[in-house]
Image (tube, rainbow, N blue to C red; front, side):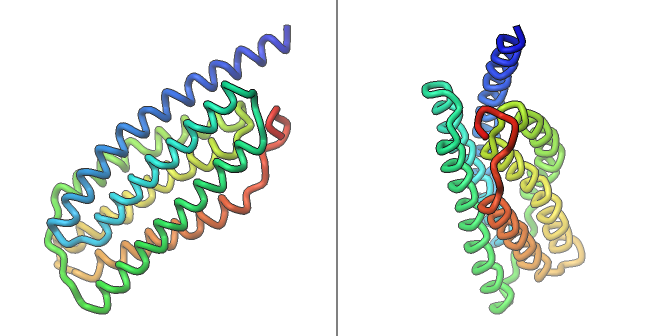
Length: 212
C-alpha cells in the first residue's frame, strides 16, 4: 500500500511538474519577445538581457521537459537528472557572459537608453508572477528527487530577482535620468546569473529519493 501511495504521489507530482513547465514556456516566450523588442527600441541593455534570460528560462524548461520525459519512459535515472542540471547551469553561464560584456560596453561608451514604460510594466508583472511559480516548482523537487527540477525552480526565482533589479534600473533611468542605472542593473543581473551557474554546476544530488 505504501509503495502504491508513493507511486501515486510521484505520478501526480510529475503531472504537475509538466503543467508548470508548459506555463513557464508560454509565459517566458511572450516575456522574451516583449522585453527584447522593447529593449532594442529603447537601447536598454538591462531590458534586452532580461529578455534573453527569458529565452534561457524557456530553454531550461525544455531541458526539464526532456528530463521528465526520460523518467516517464525509463523510470527515474540519475544520469538524466545530472545531464539536465548541468545543461541548466551552462544556460546561466551564457546569460552572465553576454550581459556582463554588453553592460560594460555601455558603461564605457556612455550610451544613454531611452525610457521604457513597456519594460517597467513587464518587470512588475514578472515580479508578481515568478515568485509564486518558483515556490510551486520548488515544492515538487523533493517529491521527484530531481536536482534539475530544483535548479529550474531556482532559475524561475532568479527571474523574480532580476525583475526587481530591472525595475529599479528602468525607473531610475526614466525618472531622475540616471542613464548609468540601466547598465549597472545589467551588471547585477550578470552577477546573479554567474553565481547561480556555479551553484547549479556544483549541486549535489537530492537524497532519499529514487534518483539518489
